[in-house]
Length: 200
Image (cartoon, rainbow, N blue to C red; front, side, top):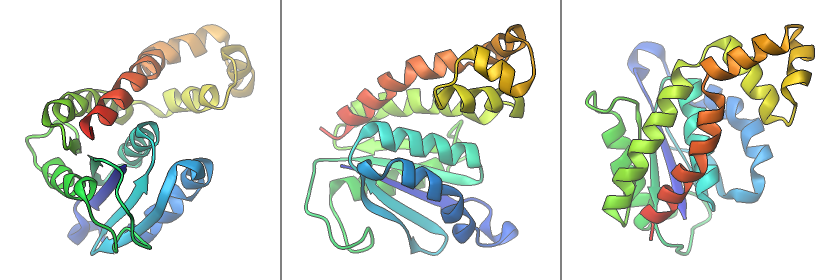
């Protein structure tokens, strides 16, 4: 079981953006509905939480939140346990881990505000290192890089992306390289395995 808890950063300065986030993430949850055990909901203050069934979904949501920006993200991994009717009504090792992870993600000592915690501490530390590396790539990707990344993620070829963006295939290749799209794609399964191991 994988619990993703996210807390807004600088909420006193920016105001509560939970409702905006939930609208922004609605397409993500529609696309990943098979992996959603409990839907995203506000738990307390400007914090939201969801329960997912796969490490791949937990990783993708964490990286999506980093892309959105302005949120500290904690991924908690733990054994499957009985769930309540909502995240607020549920408890267990993964929830405790997610709480510890999001609190650590708020610290300035973390290079990127995303942390993995779980019942297997060593695997969780390894997962955090790889997820933070991926999050750093996501955080630094330009708008031009995201244009290509989003098209490729939808199954378009580089040639089709070039046609859609009205640029050359060489320009697409350059964007793929500078945005580290292939590196991210290859590292994601490794990060997902480590997240899974963190809960075992």
